[in-house]
Amino acid sequence: MKESLLHGQVAIVTGAGAGLGRHYARLLAELGAAVVVNDVSAHASDVVREIERHGGRSTVSNHDVSDPVQAGEMVQTALDAFGGLHIVVSNAGVIDRTAFIDMDSAVFDRVMKVNAYGAFNVLRACWPVLVEQKYGRVVAVSSSSAFLPAAGIAHYAASKGAVLGLAKSLAMEGAEHGITVNVLAPSALTTMTAAGPSAHDEEALKRAEAMMSPRLVAPVVAWLVRPENALNGEVIEAAAGRAAMNFVGSTRGFWSPDLTVAELVEHSDTVFDLRDFAVLKDITELNAWLTTRTTGW
Image (cartoon, rainbow, N blue to C red):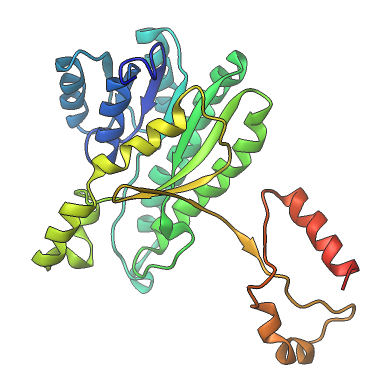
């Protein structure tokens, strides 16, 4: 199974010079895909050599995903080297920890350009190829910080929220063209995450090293990009050998034909009552559900 699961597929993995991206690229190659290893650092070449040393096919891309021209050149690299493109793992990202009061537009811009604009640039460059061939498997790497609070990373959370929204919309647009687009929210101990609050807690780091290996996230990516995958528009959490669906739920809420502040004060508990909540897949479904609720109270 290992060598044939992705046989004949061509993949791009951005931010694959280290950390999670490196593990994604190596596993996809192990499963038979030809992999374009993208990273602005020289480590991308090291990953290519690792893949080739184990009998896989790979080529390097040092293109900067924050530049739309270079993103297009990266896609062309895949086409020139391997004659096609089937899998896109938009993984490149940066993070720094800055309290919002200390965050200026330059700091915010840097993170948004790589994480949010980078995802847009890569997917925009790949999209015509995938649409024309009526096939594609896309994994957009977001973060749990897009939907769960974390202090000191407002710019990172905003950028990953943008990736989440982008991917969800593309999942709808791509469906008619045989393209699946799913969102990954991974957690693992990498050079990027090791600089967090527990960086100086040796015991915490030891526990994280044992449980939170990037190696345990990579199979989730491979599962989502295989040709047989029919999942589309899903958000999958992956960490410590666990894969789970994350979803948005809407409570029944409180409704009044002439809503007032006083009514909201009186019925606040109803707004947050989790009984009879709904899981809604798109805006059309939300609007239909709201119509049913407001006319059926």
